[in-house]
Structures are given as structure tokens and as C-alpha cells.
Length: 365
Image 1 (cartoon, one colour):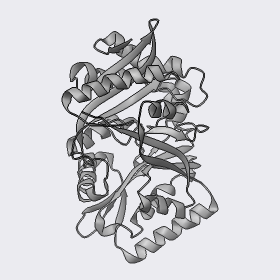
Image 2 (cartoon, rainbow, N blue to C red; image 1 turned 60 degrees about the vertical axis):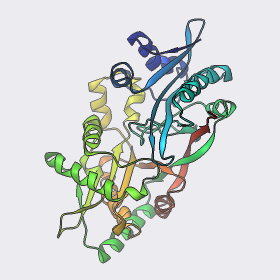
Image 3 (tube, rainbow, N blue to C red; image 1 turned 90 degrees about the horizontal axis):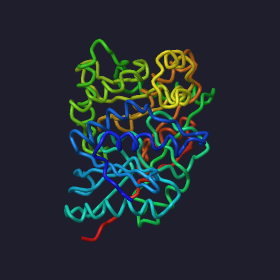
């Protein structure tokens, strides 16, 4: 039996379903359940911009999925996006959910569906994991059982594109390459690289927004976010932010922002121990023991693309790692056709360690 979530009781079932589904999995990291409840309560029950579905068998939840309708830059029209796809290994369960969504699409005249990722924050939980199941997920990345891809394909979904996570462990070779990248860039360009300044956060966020807009030709899956969205994301991420890991590149003469990169400590190393609960003392103490960071995003205006600016910004971040006990860096998720970023990380000794797949399906009207 399938049911749309319309009550707080069912929303709670939706959020906490993974607690039983992944109870014995050694790698899964539970979300902060109370935070997710608040987030989805607003989106599903109050604003109703998203629909959440549950599949029941014998009064027990066996599957869940979230979906919405929104415009797509790639498809130049309205499409359906799905996320929070989780289910037992049963094609019947998966098919119930996608049949419901596809019938809704037909009633609205929408002919394409794609996922999984969170449309209101496309850089998090992007894709179904299809390679790298023996590695813990880093902050804001997805993790799932190996059979998820099989379920989607059984429902008629095919690969739209893959995204990658790349890892670069600390090593003398990586250190030397990073130093060379810094030297190479600054011999040829007069650009200052600043850390995020929390005392001037509005100014820094405006500069990040400027880079997003100018570099929008590099965004092949979304339109540049508005300044209001950027401010909202920054507010939500405040707990995770380490200013020395977020860099903004500016031309000194004009003070114009020309690039930025965002790297966050991998708080999943802490959340794995808290198992979905907010434990302030454990989080505070655990923060000092984090040994890994994740590169969330990096953008450069066209004038400075292919100049080494990205490498220079990451060098500015990387030099802070040793003193803070950071020994691993994971970059991603990087889209498979983003050859520039992948090539840059390869030069720094990076390698692909995880592959996430975005699935899509054309629906006949």
C-alpha cells in the first residue's frame, strides 16, 4: 500500500525509516533526525512544494521517496525531480512509488523525471551510489545499498550522467605539486586569495553570488542561486563552516571577486558516533578529531579559467590541513563531463573513489 505523507506522524515515519533499514550497515551515517524533520515539515506539510510517499506492508514502512516539479536548465521546461529514495530490496515496492509519481507527472503534462538529488540544494545527496560501497560517506553525500541501482533500472530508469568523488591523501608529492601550482599562478596573475570573513559575511556572500552569476556557463545542471538562497545555505551551514577552508579570490585593484572554493570538515566522522542525535558535547569534542575534509564546490569566472586559479585557491586551503590534523581530502561530487576539474585533481594526485549516478526516464503522455 502506498500513501502520501500528510501528517506529522507519517513524516516522522518517512524520516526515521532509514534507522531500521540501515541499522546493521557499517558505513551508513544517519542524518540529524530532528533537523531533517524540521526541514521536511516546512517543505512537505507547510509549503507543500514537495510530496513525500511511503510504502507499507503489514503496517511496516518498506520504502520512501520525495519528489517535486521544477524547471530544468537542461530540459528547458518543467521536470520532476526525486530524492530520498530508500527501499528494501523489492522491485514491487520501488515500482509502487515510481508508478504513483509517473501518474502524477502525466496528470500535469510533465514528461521527464530525474534523480536522485535534492533540488533545493543540488550539491548535496546528489546521485545513487554505484561504486565505492566500502567507504564511509562524507558530509552531505549519499550512501545506499548496492541493489538501489538494480531497483531503478527494473522500473525503467537509465543513466542520465555520473558524478565522481575524488580523493587526495596527504603526501610529500601532493604537497610539492600544490606549492608549484601556487607559484605558477602568482607569477602570472595578480590575484589575492582571502579566507571567509565572518565579520563581513554579507560582503563575502555577495562576492560569491557574483562569481556564481559570471561563471554560470559552467553550471550545466542548475541556474545560479539567488543571493537569498546563498544566505539561507550559509545560515544552515554555519555550524560546519571553518573560515580558513573557504577561500575567495579577488583582483586587488578592483576588489572584484573572480573565484571561490568551499571546503568543509567531514562532520560525518562525528555524526557516525551520535547516530542521528544532536549531542553538543560530543560534537564539540569530536570536531577536534576530524581527519578529513570535503570540497563542496569551486567556481572561477571565465577570465581566470584554465589559469591555475583553482589550484592556487586549494593550495591556500591545503596548507592549513597539517596543523589541524587533516590527512585526507575528498573533492566532489564532480560531474563526469567536468573535465577541467577532474584533470586539475589528477595533477594533484587525486583519484576517483566513488561514483554516483543520476537516473532519468522519459514518460509517455
